[in-house]
Image 1: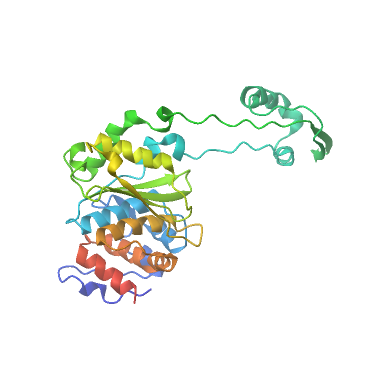
Image 2: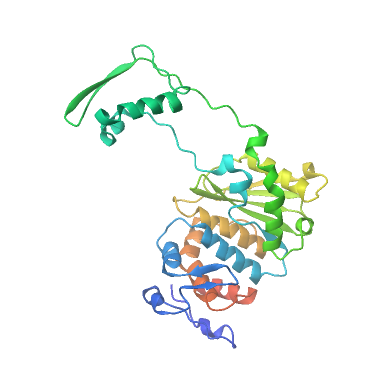
Length: 327
């Protein structure tokens, strides 16, 4: 993972490549970078190198780094919280209701919590689980006491489908798009319509990153998911609402293009999301795969963070770092 002679890439700056074993010794590793809005510290770098799930701070840093490097290409980038607030009901983590008598007996002292459990059952579970006739008996032991549970009937109640007004926080859309314009150094919401692309990183239920790219000149919505092979239609409808809000007169003319470049593990979705943005800047076909993504994690993203902690990375430097990291 050695980056060769990085200090030779710009004559006016001495850029230091820091081996992982030494990067806590350097003062610039642990200082907030005002240009990119993130502190590059030990934890930030460690999470990249040790195959951890990328946090929003990583996406913020690299999205800003790409945007400043490719200033000639008009891409407005949304913050990671955009869809979490715009489609809160569909993107937040939803706990599953689980009835597990053995786990229940292990974690609770049944003698002392009977009243509390009864209150919870009546107030929270009454409309979801009913108990009538002869399905089975379980004997379990808790606190040296024998307990017998007889399940006589179970009915499963499906949640009612969310109405559109619950799926989309339309009342927040003006604020979110105004913030998006400001964060991309644009004058107002209408300026978003003058961009070539709008990029949205989307976190689903706190455990998976996907991305959405609205191509305004091409009249195309590109949907990227490295784990699932189906499109969330609610997100597509949400994109159509965004198009209407920024002044696109015929959103129905936009076609949908799906990209299911597959990850082979449970932690690289964030890097797939970043590469969907980088390849858009580089105007490359979206033909990246797990092998390339692994290379980005093991060296390229790390090297970009080290260099970006010291100076602004322009297009020439960014592409040179990628080239050297591939050696």
